[in-house]
Image (cartoon, rainbow, N blue to C red; front, side, top):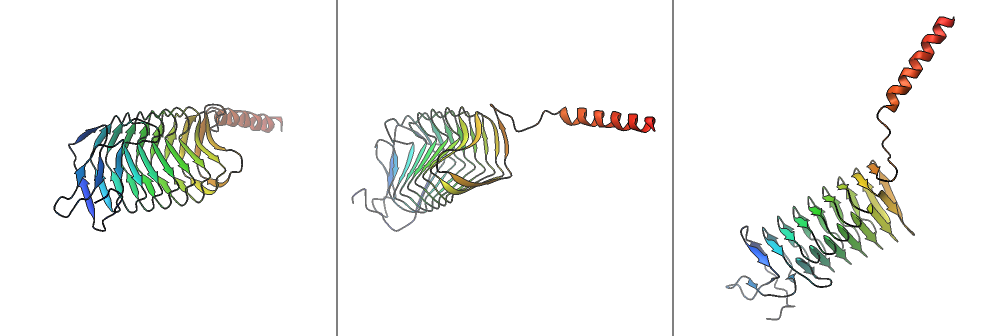
Length: 251
């Protein structure tokens, strides 16, 4: 059976105590031999309906490589994995309808998660920290849902959208990233709501050809704070009271 062939039966891989150094590939050889491990440049998934849960994966190196790589697959679940010191944490390319949840992605050499030409995926409750580039990168991707992620201390942007539309970004904590919390370039009709963006150089940056729906976010930039000085209201009230009292006694 060639690696590119995609069996139609469901595949579940759950190994909570396994640590993988370098790389593995998941696919099905037969019904008797439900899955095999092969050493490739990353943990490559090329079949639909795969669940990968509970792995620690580290040491995957090389351009466009990732600790876990979804390549033209649908309806896979990637959950509760630890991805440490890989070139990219998780890659999603030409893939639809996948769930990426509750993973810890730390110290990636490039992006924590990159999503390229992929639609209708859900990314939620992931922790992404200390990536050399972006926490998440979406390129030419649409209608993805990004909720309840913790994205912090990445060396460029929290989430970077390039030529991507109709994505929903909500209830994320995107903090202490070196450049932007959210950066949109040539991206329109994305919805950004109820996110917490603290201590990024700029909370939300819409670069050229970007027009999106942005509301009910809490933003506190490093450059210019949008949260007022806490004593301002008190000082204003004191001045107002003094003014009223003086005016009363003048009468």
